[in-house]
Length: 284
Image (cartoon, rainbow, N blue to C red; front, top):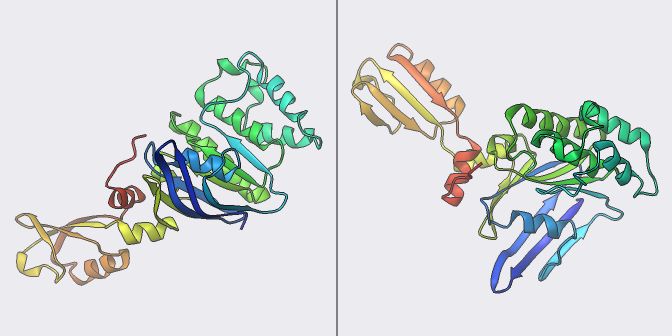
């Protein structure tokens, strides 16, 4: 494990914001950390990265671990050009690698904006520059706090393409928080935090299977032909069944194909699993 956290507790004044969290971040994985505003996500990132002291518990980091951070608010100089900002950051490290920076500029497609002032960039452009800044020191793990919040779909897709490229090329480990649960479905592991507690963790597919129910709507030629599964009659000839697995739906459709005039099927989603666990919806 790159990072292992045990029984993390953190309070601000009398308010306990983290209540005994256990976390594991495996090398080369992408971990999505999900929670509503105020759940404790940013505090967790700051503790895991060593920027914030914990009250009690333990964080064990891999020896010689190098980390990169992308914050919600940028730390770059708005008055300087993109190129000047990145050059300044490069010179902060003894083992400065100009070829690596050139490669990052290429894969993030920021060549056309290198001469522009950072403050003049769009949200998506700023985020890509921030990611390059965080990767200059060739980190083993990249922490990102809401990296795609407020960005348009095209910018979000480009950033996720970048994440996938970095993982495939160099085995980068990524730990991120996000408001977009459909993005988290591509992660290797998901943690759901609410009010300072980890409510569930696991592969996205497992959380969906455990906490989200599929929905099947059938239109039947007759009520007598209805399958044995529990169903709700929405209106005459139209029925609703939830919780079936995909293979069960296929079997049912094959078995009753003569009696079914039409159907619609929707698998469970991570958003539904999150709602089941927390009773809340994430507001993007």
